[in-house]
Length: 546
Image (cartoon, rainbow, N blue to C red; front, top):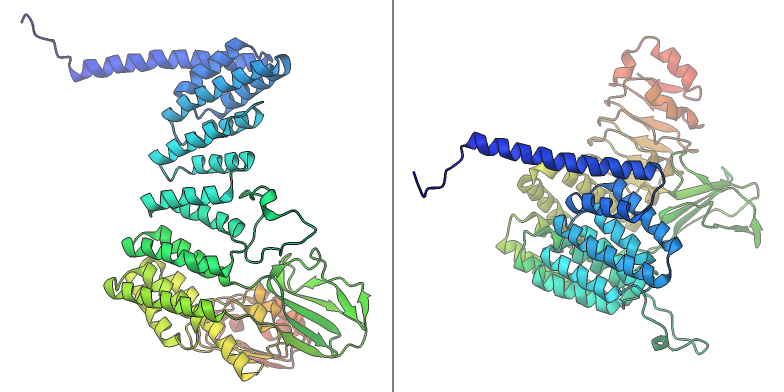
């Protein structure tokens, strides 16, 4: 039929496409092999530069070719003058822009661009920032671009307040921007540090020095600025309560009230001739320069971790041969009155949102955290109720909520123990699934963990250096790894657990004063010759219940 276009069959189309692909593949493989041959022979000429450009234009994720291309460019650097190198690298940046259009999240392209920018004789950082702005306007979660932008900001010395304004713009256009919130969290401590150094007459005025760069130093955020941040993030999660990004940032803000690294407890024992020190966070006492001074004289001592697995630990001890006065001292920190009133206001706002969104897990979890920050004992009943709701609305994470609830119950029990000024820690029948804050139990002599859901006593349990009695009946304990070198431990009650091997009891052999052990209801009691084996393993035990 004249004048009509012949429509090809599907089979014909597929065959033509196959032939076209084969043709392109042959060209690609030939160019690749030529590149590999040239690299093997140590050839760094213009032809090799063109071949790699041809291949990377269609496949910018070929890491080996980027490496070869850098070798060629370094050779050019060595043989050409600065102006020629400048032109070569400017052309390279233009080529990289075309690669980023093929794949805006190409690892190789962004890495190579950073390498080129760092070697440019006269870099144009304004152009690079403009490129980042364009890329982030297309995809504000392109983490490759965010990483590159941070490098550009560091190299060019962009003021921190300018970058903070940049995050304002991005967050204002899209609340659901993890990268912007995260970047903001790194900038705030630089622009609003917690304890800025007071001006000194011996120093230059602050305005004479350049603003800090986000990568030069790090400080905690001052309380005044933190309080201002709450309004911004509150607008975000009231706008979209189900978006996670603002809630995560909000939790970061609440976490800024944590204590600085400090000594929280010191224990000195005449009987054991040892000094134990608890810190507010894990440290390496051998590297932080912890100094023991007795009678005004510095002592040459070797600090020891409470467990061989810990190079960084909140609790360290050292044997001492001198007679030293017994002591136990603690330090605590509290929220300021101003911050307490603001957090109370934040709690009221979240409660209002919870009335509108009763099953929103982020709102429920934040309410729990605010209650914990304000009055953990006063809000204990409400906290437990909210945890139960969380387990129902977010059942996939019920184990996480159980662990978090266990953590908070332990914190409450520690507070009650401190208020009562006793050294007995009892938290039985609370459905505990995990143990935490054991570094705060350095002075405890008697602990009761019975009737919970514990499966192990972790290495951190070795921090209980004053422990004399351990009750852990009616759990599911299989592992006693943490009952290690407890110098005062005399009694261990483990009735109705899941200890099945003698090897699981091996850590008890490191406790020199252990006298009473109750293993009734454990599978290990069914082992042949168990009594004789235990007598050999634990010769100090005189009261063994099987």
